[in-house]
Length: 478
Image (tube, rainbow, N blue to C red; front, top):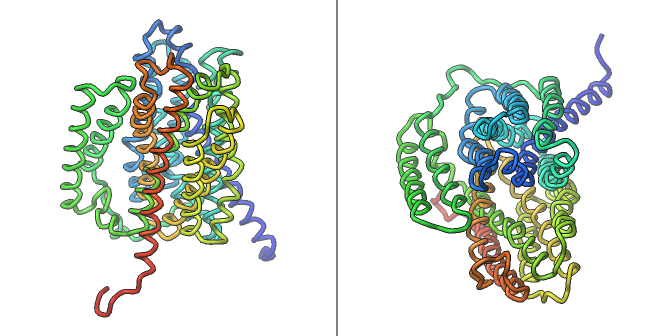
C-alpha cells in the first residue's frame, strides 16, 4: 500500500530535522572541546604537578590535530564514504573523551586529546559538507546558520560549564561530559544521515598521501610557530615559520604533479572560493583580538573582578548564538554575496567604535560595539560559507569544507599571536598583566584600529570579487 504524499513529505521533513540535529550536535561537541579545556589549565597543572608550558599541550594537541588534518579528512570523505567517516569521527571523539577522563598521566591525557582532535576535525569538516546532501539548496543558509549557532554555543558554554564541572566533580568531568552527547550524536547520525551517493567505480579517485603529509607538516609547523613561547617570537618560532614556508612550497609542487591531488590548485581560480578563504582568515584574525584583548581591558582598564569579566566576555558568543539562525534565513532571502559584505561592514563599524571609545564609557561602551561585531560576524560567517558550499560540486564538498574551517582556524591562531603582539606593543608594557589602566585602554584602542584596517581590507577584497564576477566578458574571451 502506497503512503499518502503528505505523509511522505512529513516523514522526509522529520528525517531532515533529525539529520540536522546530528550535524548540530557534532558541531557543538567539536567547538566545546576547544573551549572547555582552557579553563582547566590551573587545575590540571596542580593535578599533574606540571608547568604551564606542559599543561598548555592539552589545548595545543587538540588544536594542532584539527588544524593539520581538517583538509585531509574532508578530502577523504569525498573519495570514500562521507557518512561512514563521520560516524568514525564521532566514535573516535567519544572514545577519546573516555580516555581523557580516565588518563592517569599528563602524557596519556595529551595523546588522548590529539585523538579527540582528530575526531573533531572529521566532525567539523563533514558537518558542513553534509548540508548539501541533507537540505534543499534554497535552505542552505538556514542550515549553515544553525551550525554557526551551535559552534558559538559550544564556544560560549565551554568556560562556564567547565568551571562548574571542575568545582562540582573534578577535572575529569570536563571530558566525560562529552560521552553521552557523543553517543547520542552517533545514534542520530547512523539513523538519519543520508547514504552516500556513489558514482561508478571508474569515477572513484585515489587519496593523496604525500600531499596530506606535506600539508600536515606545514600547517603543524605554522601553528606551533604562532603558539609556542607565550607571546615571544624567538629562534625556534622563526625556524618553524621557515619550515612552514618550505613545506607549503613543496606541497604546491606535489599538488601540481599528482594525478589525484588533495587540493586541486585550479580550484583557487574560482574567485568566490579564493575570496571566501581570504576574508575568512582576516575576519577570524580580528575576532581573536576580542578574546585576547577583552579580558585585560575589562580587568585592568575597567577594574572588573574575574566573575564579572567572564560574564561580560560571554556576551559576544551569546549574541553570535542568537543571531546565527536568523542570519542564515537572511542570507537565503537576500543573497549570500550581499550579506557577506553587510556582515563585514558591521564588523568594521564595531571595531572602529572600539578604537575611539574612551574607557569612561564603562561596560556599556564595551558591550555595545562587541554586540555589533559578533552579530556582523555571525552574518558574515553564515553567508560566506553559504556562498561557497551552495554551488560546490558534490565530490568536492568535503575538501572545500575543510579549507573553509582551515582558513578560520589559521586566522584564530594568527590572531592570538599577531593581535596579542600589537596589543602588548601598543600598551607599552613589559608585563601586560600589571600595566597601568590608561596604557591598557590605549593599547585596546590601537589594536582595534589595526583590526578596522584588516576588515576594510577584507571588505575591499569581497567588493572587488563581486565587481569582477559581475563584469561582462569581452567578445572572444571566456
